[in-house]
Amino acid sequence: MKTFFRAAALAACVWLVGCAAPGLTPSPLEGAIDPAAQADATPNVQAGDLIYPSGGLKPLANTQLGSQYVQALQPPVDLWERIRRGFAMPDLDNNLVRERELWYSSRPDYVARMTERGNKYLFYIVEELERRGMPSELALLPFIESAFNPQAVSTAKAAGMWQFMPATGRQFELKQNLFRDDRRDVIESTRAALDYMQKLYGMFGDWHLALAAYNWGEGSVKRAMDKAARSGQSTAYTDLPMPMETRMYVPKLQAVKNLVANPEAFRVTLPVINNHPYFQSVEVDRDIDVALAAQLAEVPLEDFKALNPSFNKPVLLASGTAQMLLPWDNAERYQANLEAYTGGQLASWTAWVAPATLNLAAAAKRVGMTEAELRAVNNIPPRMLIKAGSTLLVRRAAGLNVDVAEHIADNGQLSLAPEVVLRRTTVKAGRKDTVASLAKRFAVSAASVAQWNKVSTSASFKTGQAVVLYLPARATVRKAKARRNPVARQQLAKGKKPTRLAKN
Image (cartoon, rainbow, N blue to C red; front, side):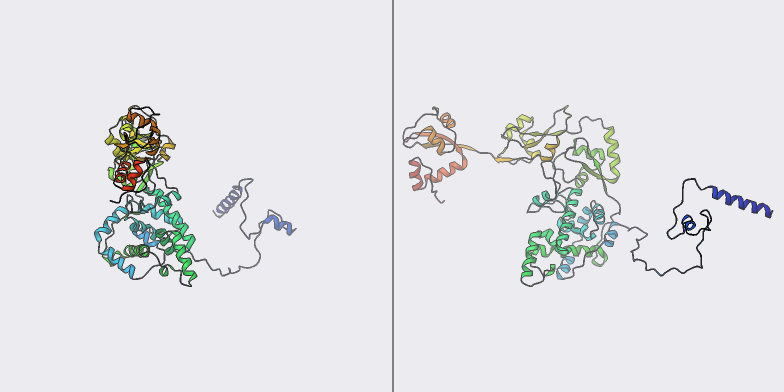
């Protein structure tokens, strides 16, 4: 039996050696001895012989291991905990922070509303901050800017949850045209805001100064720092003179941070926000009505608009809208319902470019819509002309399957001019007045003056003859004022433009 086991063991060893595939040589371990090299160095040793290190065992040298943080085995329970783990900005502790803490903690309904709105957007913002290695406190900044309302517009015309001014938005490539305003777009405005804050932090090397610059402007902060430096004063955030709005900006953020860090201490209840994406993007490959897109996604229209606040019109244009956002569980439903849709045209609206300057009545007639509907869908104020080259949203003709072109979707703008109201007025001709001289004086065409008075364009008028003119309403008022002024009245009598107006 012992002989059998010895034979079996020897056969196993031979089998293991034979398993080495021809042409495949295992990589030697670092510091190991290469048999071929030792054979060259030691003539009595053959390359195929097994070589072992000589001498006894040696102790390993002491090595200092680098200190690395250990990732928690358990993921954060909810998004608030994830935000807390990412806090990285230095804390601000002063009376302004205490005041803002009291303000927020005494308004639980307000805090509840804005945190409920933020529920849709916070996960995405936190993900982007972590990807860029930025402090997670910045995810709370929309609470300060807009109370997480992507439709918010300030008195200074800043828009969206990150409150971009039009010029700053264009600087960071946020589209602003007839069909969309990316200052309100969840993904694009977040990208631009984080780009801007990274730029500001690179300029100032301090998050508090960077935030002050985000609110006040980088130029304003730089000038304040330069002035303080020239005077030998501190250029720290807390020591710089700045407007009260900017002075309160970082304390507001710090107060919200403190509430999130320890809501129990402030008797604030934060709604549960799962540590999971709220939405995902879906490609838009055909023009489609907003209402229909929401219907196919099985999402209430208000919820759809809350996720896609940048869309200005009741239609999504495929050439100008790369994607739309849908709640995580509704994206697949949308795709399935879209493929099964048999209701005809996806879009009932299209774009139309005005070929000439038109009043609203003429434009409505050309596109087959009522004046009221055309005015409402394009937000055209009363008594305005639509200038040539303007883009308007109009009803899509039945059977029209051509989507709006990319250059129109990306650059469409509505240009308006005040509609001039003409009023009939009568003036007395001066000595040697002609159709041409009156036309020049009142900035109208000679052909119009001739038509209004049923004369030829080369006709002359007798001194004191009543001449009919149709002038803009403001010019008529100016004329009436001029007649009440003695000096201006004499100038009018001589056929000259009045230079002095009566003060009424």
